[in-house]
Image (cartoon, rainbow, N blue to C red; front, side, top):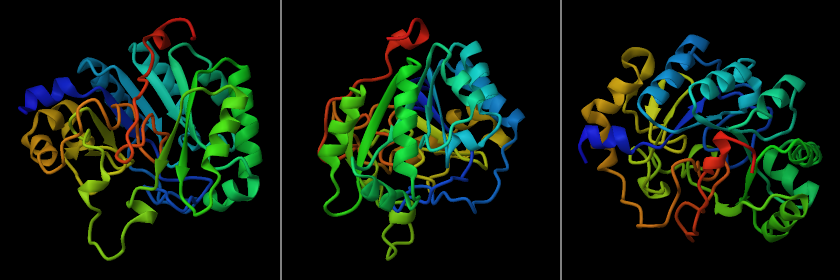
Length: 298
């Protein structure tokens, strides 16, 4: 695939605003934690990424972390992205949501995504290492739905005996219909420590082909699951120049091709971000971000 073809094939940009998080999930693909270093990307840098995303004709932008709501500039980023007619998704663990964040989430064209681990609080909290996180997340899921905010969710299989089916049933009872189950990806805290870098077999195949991510330091990766695959840096080169450079095609060639019609859609961030699909095994059909997100809420 030529660099021009790659540029026009990208459908989603993941903006990893921060590595800081108020949880320390066992399977976190980015090693996020409250102790994570501060990002080097500035608000001006992120505004350029948003502008470049829109100018390149990429339809969707996702704000993720770490925990995206820990970045106080998130409402501004959401507003700017909507001004540029981008579809917006915010991934949050929904543990704590400030009123100004709720106001930003209620804009048309914005949806939320969340991971959920069990219908039982003790199992969920054991994955997140955050006592009380299940109660807070579940309450905020209910609140988001009451506000009419579109949502999708994933149940990630992390621990043996985890009640994943019951978790999905619980989410449906609350009113979320877009639910998928994923397995832990061997990256980040769940990486195989015998390997210098994770295997590309952990990736769904859409990295650099249908989606890219931008790290808190400005590195452009295939997605947040592939931080060791660096195509360039937006602070140094700008997003358009990175996508038009040869490195993107070189890295894409190292990643196994996705199975046609299966695997992750471009707005899907596999296990740490909620998955529309289970990424690799088994595979499910997916429901992409609805076009109606640009207008009235579905």
